[in-house]
Length: 113
Image (tube, rainbow, N blue to C red):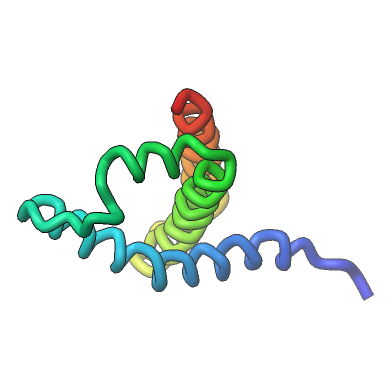
């Protein structure tokens, strides 16, 4: 039986979908609360900056961003196909390269914190 490389693609997609489902709604609510001036005391700028500056914080933030980007790229690929764009190799290449570039950019920005 021939080995498939599909698990390599499907694992980040599934993990990214889970991250999006659990983390993004919380981030959106916290952003709205901050915009309204109701920031919980534990989420002050100083504490969030300290979290983002720590090694664990950088790893968590990178994980959320990279997995979300990968999952979104795969969802967009499926959406393009559903809308009738049949140049799947081109679409997949552009979307996955964009996800990789954005992941690298986020890693570089996180390293600067």
